[in-house]
Image (cartoon, rainbow, N blue to C red; front, top):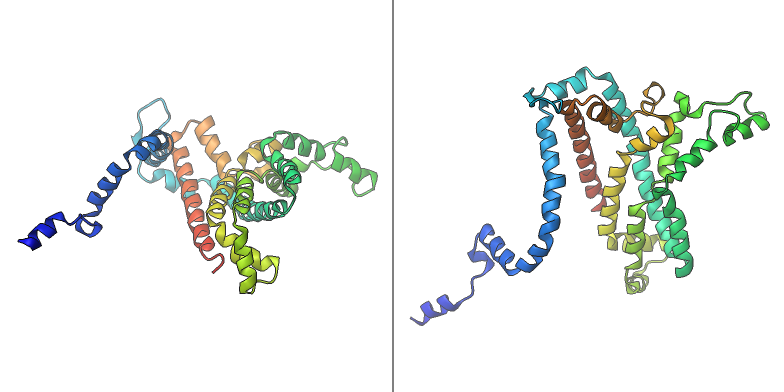
Length: 316
């Protein structure tokens, strides 16, 4: 009888419940927190998750925004990869952009943040603003447009003509050989954005006692501190910065449009974002544009997954 009473009084443990029962119990226990998160969660579902799924569904249809969608199955994807040569050019250019601007801007943000973190606080705030300003200022396009203008008033052309390097102005943003490199340079110049600020914040939150303990354990220089202490401690910020860098590297279409127009000369810097804007915003072939967006989404998710695997090895 005593054994039965003890069993009845024993609190229910995690092992006695299913996953669903345990989840529901925790949700009731933290109902205030869930109520506070609910507005953001609802907006996130309505304006992020739901549009992604709708885009995937529409990619299987023929939809022009005026008539009801007509089911086409995988025809849009077949057309993309087997019939649309411009899309293949856009894929190639996008991968070139992403493979250069993504890793370089990521490493540049981290190294500049590490450098700024070593400065005195008053100087640090000013230098941070100087590096961050190009990412939020449209004046960058004006500066580079004037620098590489295709007439003799362009600074690059003017200097090159004066010293005898060239005899006539180079049409930088209308020359196949120059468009892509220049757009990549401008993209890198404007890439020190939110990820850069996240790295600075992460560096400033590291407990200095970690470095003292590391010195006792045999760490001898700043590079060893960076690899064995700083980077492992900053893994959340590193992951956040990686996601932003990848997203930004696949979305540099605005940079090309501002400098070289859309489409660029001979599609030399034409990206998937341009192709998406062409079919979705100009031709209103929403089903086909949704297929393009879905391909871009899959590429970005795959890149994020690879980066997450790589970052998990940092400091090991």
